[in-house]
Length: 315
Image (cartoon, rainbow, N blue to C red; front, side, top):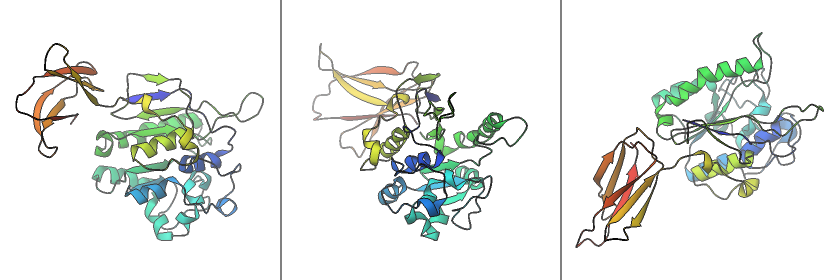
């Protein structure tokens, strides 16, 4: 299932690449407008995403093509480009070799981590090399062909994994807009695709304005992290691109019955509705295979019961 944001833009005026990658990790570029290596752009701040994750017990990993996994990859090794690896610019990551090597791994390890489903992190930042990300012309078929070919091979490894099918999500996005006709770098829009069992799907797209701040805000909301980092506090999240399972109770105006309205259903996927009186022991009320995204279930009044709790799930 996929959704598309047709108006996702580079953070205004931030070029070239590096500042945008830093923004994806911290909600701001800290005034960086160059692609220089870490020694020229070191950031001593601790206000960035993976620190919030570690504090909250959320596991994370970066998988980069072209790194060895034996050291902290703070310099280029073409086609690996350090400017596309934002974690290498934060001193609290690179000053701790063990932390760096533990979290920044060769891309080739991702498939095994996913298939085993025991070593896969909750948040994963994937960094293709400069050929596979569509940046450089590395073969006679062209940069776009190589990018598409790489995605067509690598994305199914993720979407077929248990970590994805259990309501995971993949965000595919470019770092910045391309050159305009007058030679200036533009802010977009850039390609932005969501793949998820929770995506609205059916070719759904919107024209809402998103930036890298929206990405940071959405990731923080997914993992319940706070505070919002820098400009993420001002950004719109990606809620419109997802279809979330929701339930609400509607009182029957003609009697004592309760109508349970369940929305965000996935047609063709079994849905289970459970009930409980103490939030610890749950019993099945009903299960069904919906043909629409919203249904109502009538629950009769039961004398002698003080209250009931209900929940729905898509196994």
